[in-house]
Image (tube, rainbow over all chains, first blue to last red; front, side, top):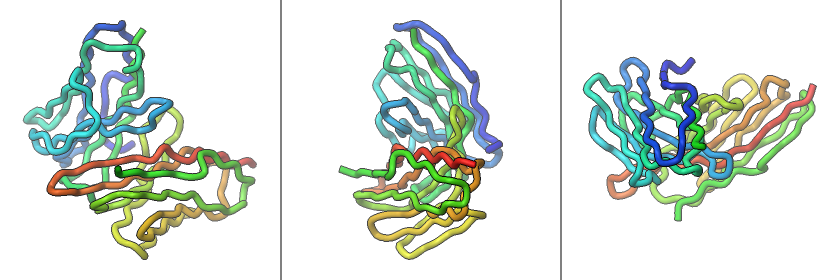
Length: 114
Length: 112
């Protein structure tokens, strides 16, 4: 158990809908990262927040947005969902920021778009 | 373009048969190289971080090494419980911006 929690574990929804995924980092960690993992694309970095501020941005679609709240939990919002958005979404956390930090991953949220 | 490539894509070993997994990279601004283990349907589990060429780290049957162009994960006398997908990732810093790139992984199956 990494100490990172994600809810819900599974989410099934329809195309065009909007969903919110939630992540609580390990105690003491200030950074939260979001990743998308699909069968054909591997693990893709989406976005990083550090202490409430956006710190790094990867291949995140405009339909997706995220934020980190004062209690350091983070939410990833996915809107106008398409079939291709079906994937595992992972959250990770680290103590600080920067590319040398070890990231600890949560168990993931499996999103199925029908 | 920054790129991380892992080989082989899949590997089957007999229990006790040692081997190595490769992670080669063509990137700018490498600050750290990470190895993770991932079981099906679960989040990646951290194994090692390597920061500079020549560095080596060990944990039980695993040993990770780093050169300027690639990293190896050596598995000595593997057991069936070592079966998993092994991912490598790089942390990059260029002009103050950060980027994280994962390889597509090596699926390891160890047969009893």
